Amino acid sequence: MLRPNRFKRALRGDTPLFGLINSVPAPLLVEMLGYAGYDFVILDLEHVSPNPETLENLIRAAECCDVTPLVRVPGAQPDVILRVLDAGAQGIVVPHVCSAEEARIAVRASRYHPVGARGISGGRTTGFGTLSLPDYMALANTEILVAVMIEDREGVEAIDDIVAVEGVDLVIEGAIDLSQSFGVPCQPQHADVLTALDLIAERSRVAGVPYCAVPRADGQLGQWLRRGVRSFLVGDDRGVIFRALKAHIAGLREQASSARWSTLSGPDA
Image 1 (cartoon, rainbow, N blue to C red):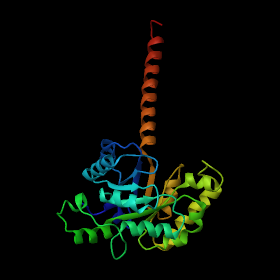
Image 2 (image 1 turned 180 degrees about the vertical axis):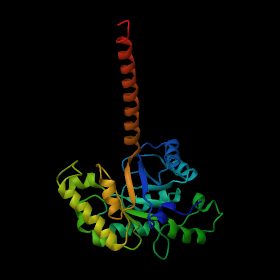
Image 3 (image 1 turned 135 degrees about the vertical axis):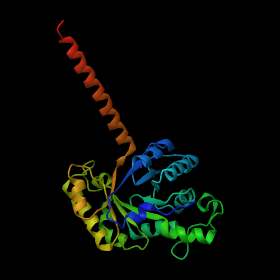
């Protein structure tokens, strides 16, 4: 059953919020992210292909540990948005939004009358009838979060129009794809990309739409905090897991090497 969206409400506060992209579609891992203390998780349908049953179980795992489940859909596609919200997602993340019209399509597909035209259904979102449909529809219009990702030069150029769309709740940067759009692929720290991010953040602030930054270099988290940004996407679970595993085995090998050297250089050496 749809619950209050803790992440959406917290966006208006002053507490820093942190989330990860879930690229390993395993409910156990999502559950771990929640208990580890992340505020939101973005279940990925853009670059990952979990089947509908798996997606539902990923959302259930997030629900059981009180981490807000958002789903990154492949684009502003009403049929896909409908299915992920009916599965229980508390919000959608739409990549590569380049115009106000795309943002309006996403909002309209995510909300019911009078602000949208999402198809009406019951099921797990209503607690199988625990909530009446009218009560659920009113709750969904309040609690479902719509986030847009700005990942293209066209999106940067249209940022004022995009953040003016009623119902856009969050703007997320996508500097890696943005670097390609600016002709400097895989250079998220390039001056042109950083200038674009500054513009996106500032225009979002002026419009009163929260901005979600992606700190990639030392000091950037503090810089964004000083600018009033309070939500942060801090990578994907694959990267975090790989770095943790790599550090773990490196530490063990270092210990083993030190112990071996100590043995070899002992009194009998």
